[in-house]
Length: 185
Image (tube, rainbow, N blue to C red; front, side):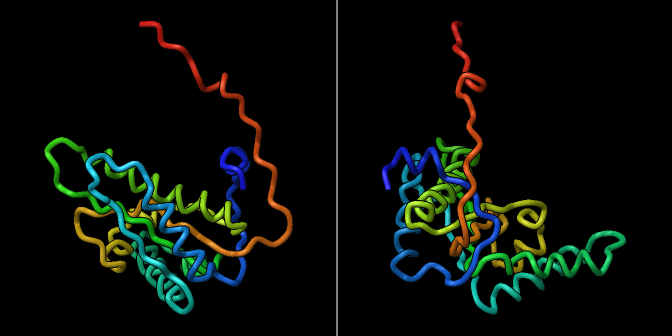
């Protein structure tokens, strides 16, 4: 796939099916992630793969986090349990910042986000489907503890990966002129 075609036509795919990416595909996905911009070569990221029965355990962790909220309904717990089952493989992308006098936390978190984007672009190039999901559960202390994050780490998102069934949707055509202005001082 041509690089510009990839960049211009990548879309999120919310419904993903078995099989999960194989070992060779995963190697390429993570190689792409590791090419993220990285000021100071700090490598401020790490990844957890979640598949098979671990997806159900993540669903239980999500339900535990939701249950800590006020006036929780059973259907909310059921929904939380089902979230990780929307794809055969999930990758938790974790910003794992390193202390550095010149490189702020914000740059390191952005670098981890770029690593997630690298996974998504590589998935598209390989003909796989991908969806970056975040939301409240990505920031929940119960989820973070359950996944073994340190107090300085944060989840930048869960990348859902799998096979695409049917046609991919056509991306919405956005006009650069609607988002770009010249600054003239």
